[in-house]
Length: 322
Image 1 (cartoon, rainbow, N blue to C red):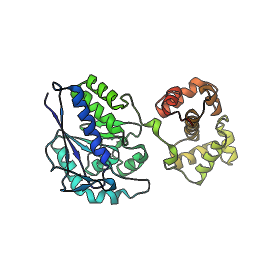
Image 2 (cartoon, rainbow, N blue to C red; image 1 turned 135 degrees about the vertical axis):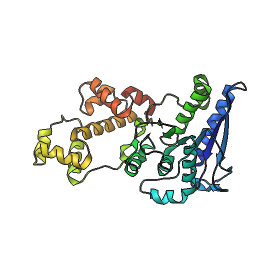
Image 3 (cartoon, rainbow, N blue to C red; image 1 turned 180 degrees about the vertical axis):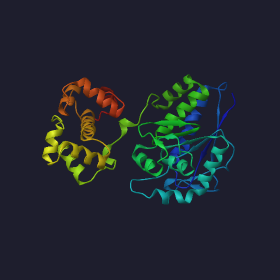
Image 4 (cartoon, helix red, strand yellow; image 1 turned 135 degrees about the horizontal axis):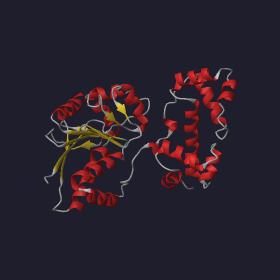
């Protein structure tokens, strides 16, 4: 099998680590595969002669060329920053992405590189993902895109998008698996100390950094539910506390938040349970009771639905000490 040609598109303000992360892991895979294995020909390309990454680091780049896979790294983007202003100077890169896709080249974005693919029109009518922190923004900007914020890697008809930063390794391992075989991918992961068994970014979501939808009424309901997460959910009593009918409560809450009070309560309970699993030695049954579930099995099922992991697995991965 011939070497797979991989081009990484460097552009002003991109994260240098995301420019070199995939090539570095592919280099390791080439060593693991040995001289008889299929290799990778990687180049850092740009429509510009000079590129400075985020933080000002200068990158050596080559002119755009024909490749089998074009990787688009992410860029510095914080909550509240103007995405349009960030993308406006990148018209040459967006045009290059569009041109490569038109020739049948597989295009891959890392993290918020998905916004460049979206501007190139590649995500319309496709499933996609990005960093969980910016998934809502991508969905808002591209209503024709089926954004999957829980996914680490999504491939849809030749276009691949990934979650934040380290998900570049999940993509790279999948690429190695398809090009060099499962054994090479597995060994490469072991050599690099990279987790090759992740399936979701849901366990990493920190709801404190997500915008909380709703207006005054729904926020008051949320605060009341937050006051006693272990209390039995009583819709009638909740409606009475706000002097409205249950039907009105459900309608107004759904209009403001897009979900029901019970759905909010379940997510709040899971959020509190995650904190307890990370920071205490309390048993899973004890934590379940503390957030309102007498049956640990029911709690574990709900927890896994929200986070992608059973409580004990979550604790093993995220336990904090000290």
